[in-house]
Amino acid sequence: MKKKDLLNYLYILLGTMSLSFGAVTLLSPNEIITGGGIGIALLIHYVLPNLTLGTYIILVSAPFILVGYIYYGKKYTFKTLVTMLLLSFFTDFFKIVLELKPLVNDILLGAIFGGIFVGLGVGFIIKGRSSTGSTSISGELIASKTKFKVSEVLLAQDALILISSIFVYGDIKKSFYSLIGVYITSKIVDMVLTGRPSKKVVHIISNQTEHLSWHIREKIEEHGAVVNGVGLHQEKNKNIIFVAVEASKIQLLREIVSKHDPEAFLIISEASEILGTGYKV
Image (tube, rainbow, N blue to C red; front, side):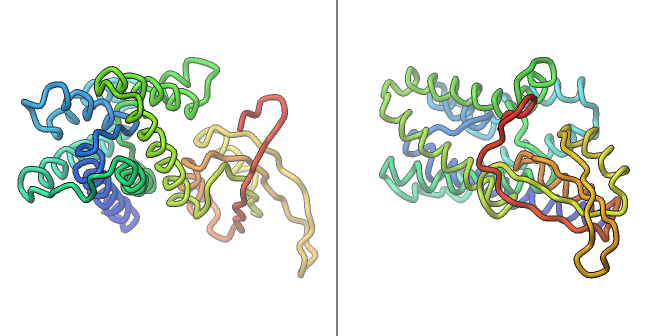
């Protein structure tokens, strides 16, 4: 196994531990919901506590992973399957074997720190080139079949989960606190992946711009422009790729650039707003 693959699995291991820890010690005891399959599993476990939370994570995620396998193939779903199994294992390990107690018995603190641990977990999992499965798979599939972006579909799915929690818990205030946790989670994920929150603008100075442009279009599924420039010191002509990229795709972009032009110069900066035909940021 390559060093990069080992590092990716280490990220997945750390991510699943952090996510499971947050769910067991902060979210579940305070009846706080997060998005995705974990959120669905938490709701089902609250209604039907006869099975463990880890078991429900598998039951919720398995159909989505099967769909991912059908549409995207074995390579896409293998890491997601590993991630799901680790999430299930650590969730039950922390709850049943270690018998971890709630860190706090305050719903606001539970939402804040639960959001932090879940955000760290999801961020590390994405950094390891995997996903938590479930709604992330359906989000990508729906986006590929419609005009909506993946982020928009995921937001809609998470909104449905939060709305469902109102009826499950019978307390709208808990859903508002859950919303705080989901917001914190999204910001922490961005910080793990890029160091700072928000969408990113990337400049790539490379001698392989044509090759890199093709990979960006096909694998990142983003469009940008190639502009000509002059080097500051050697005053040689340089081509610069200019592209707006979602934070969740930054790690993949880094790997593409590193693989196909290790000598390329990469600049990542924030994009607070992008306007124009074909762009929705």
